[in-house]
Length: 266
Image 1: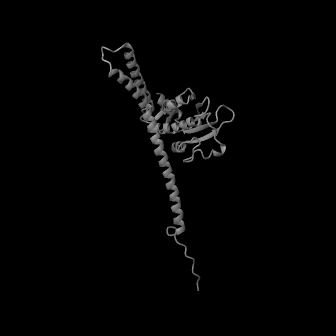
Image 2: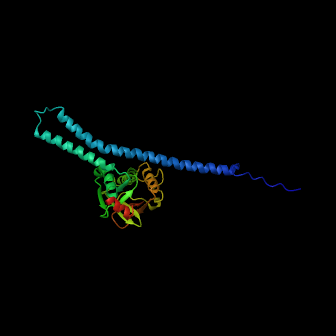
Image 3: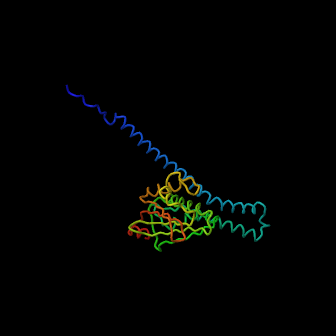
């Protein structure tokens, strides 16, 4: 009598296979959920920064002008009041001009790195001023162009700046330095600060969802890395030992080649 073969269900009917697929799908869902949460929070913060940037200066200028115009007739206007009106108009013009730098127009999404750093500085200027943080720059003389969505890259860099600013809140003589250099078709931007030190054992955790050493949400750096990898780049963190800084974020991004640069300059 022939021995019956052991019945082995096909993969699509095998409970063990199906259970593994469910677990894999659950893990994938959680990863997507984390990415969506990070994007939502980071986007909301970015919009808030954009709104607060223009609102503060323009609101103060309008209130100052309104207090003069609503209480003084044309015949009663003094030279000092006229000068105040002109000064506030100048502030509004400069604010609108600076705001335009946060949304540079480009049909092909190409922008200069220097314009990106100017935009980051404008967004964080109140925090830099409040904590008396000195900002240093070290860029090549030639323009460096990137062909990426400006607002997304701005979000990425703004998240890293915010992390550095939080780490500098209780530091004497706080400093942030931004340097950049090209190598093998890649752009490397180094953002260094002398803020609160991070244990090297936490190096692998720093970009994890929900992890924070500054009391923040733990989403900013996670989203920064997510965006960077989306643009075929990567972010790493180095801990400094031999200079005035405690750590550096190294952001590696693809850049335009020489021919594309010459086309931009023309």
